[in-house]
Length: 265
Length: 71
Image 1 (cartoon, each protein chain N blue to C red):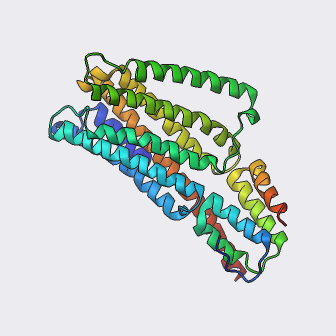
Image 2: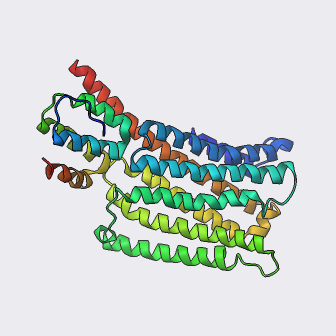
Image 3: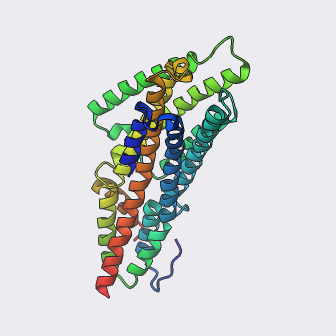
């Protein structure tokens, strides 16, 4: 279902499907994508509960994606319905609020994880270090340093740099997620965490791409606008996949247990 | 973890806490019923299978070691 949703996304964004309704169809998938993530996150919380660290982490992630969903809705409303520049507006406040919520969610997970970079394979650790050094330098340059504009008003600069700082938070989470994912690599819980990690990386790529080609994005020049939006939508698909697979993992355990209990009866 | 079974094995209590920690209270409550009147050996064996499948053998062994120390 999620793959089909993304195929439709690519069709709406990279073709003229729908004719005069194409812009509306694009906006629809743009707003639906975070709602899909929210739905699967909610379902994961329901099956897991929220009184354990995983559950509390899911609550924070739900809050973070809810902020992004509100931000996407407001951005689309300003852009498509009101026809005004959505930056800077209250949408940006919601976008930026998500980053600390992601951080707090990840802190919950750290409580039950035994993180140790030392346990990782040394060659893998070398490439991870190299990769993250490059990402951090790229994000810092384009999303923080280049984000500042002398001619812009203070609020614009605060929001612009805020996005960059948020992306540095995402980098930190992704970096410390690697030993967590590594630790679980032989277990079923590896899959949801792997999806979550990929989702974070796609967010970083999308945000940095936007920072580099912001003017072309604002003017909706092909393919810059399409690539940025389809990357953000892809990140929501990966978040949804993470929550879906976490829920399925717990459902499998419950299903097996019911079978064992009924066979003993 | 709320304990509703009749025996008060520390191993069972720790096992249920571990299940609640990793896959939530709903599933842990199901295991309360499943572990009713089961021996510590059965509980540890079942827990080892469950945690190994969820977390991988190495991580599962580390988590279960904490239970052994409370036996």
